[in-house]
Amino acid sequence: MSERAGHPAAESLRALLGGSAGSLKIFPLPEVVVFPGAPAPFHLFEPRYRAMAEDALAGDRLMAVATLRSPADASQARAPVHPIACAGFIEADERLADGRYNVLLRGVARVRLVEELLSTGRPYREFRVEVLEDVYPPGGPPALAAQVSTLERCVLELARRSEAESGERDLAEAAARMRVPGRLADAVAAALVSDTGSRLDILGELDVGRRLDRVVDEVAALLVGSQDDGGEPFASA
Picture 1 (cartoon, rainbow, N blue to C red):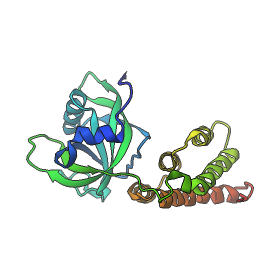
Picture 2: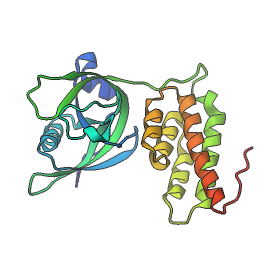
Picture 3: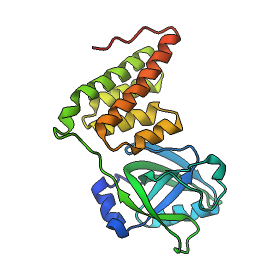
């Protein structure tokens, strides 16, 4: 794939979208939830999504992954989607000889799908969106230090119980280097939470404290599962 160095921060994303008048290309998928900061590879083969990739690559390289409300509606032209999606930047791309694309999308920011634009003349869907911000308590990120520590310890314990080649070990090392609570919660959720409904709930949670608590609950459930498989109990401090 050809690569594009770097990606816009949320502030640049707002500027690219042009505020409330902006539009964003939407890639609606069943049971797929992308998180800010996380990479997501896609193979685009339908004509409408080939066109979307071509236009994105010729322009701002932005698109959002939106989750269909019902997988059964995937064949519908304008199937209902969940209102919170993840806007991302195409970091790398490969155009195949037959016109298909492989792209690597990096999540940038949560967005609310405000209004679908119906008269664009393009085969893919576009929405006017609102870029959403993380919400911190009055004390800011330092006020969440205890919750961050709990999540870090849970991930480290899960890694300790995992096989040496498991991705949990890499995640544990990455988590230990993270200092932004919202980014930590998103990175752990992207890597360890598999249930679509749970991922959607976490994506839609703007309150970072509550998001951390939700992700801790998910990782704790994995720890309980590993204990049931013969692992040691996790002692909280």
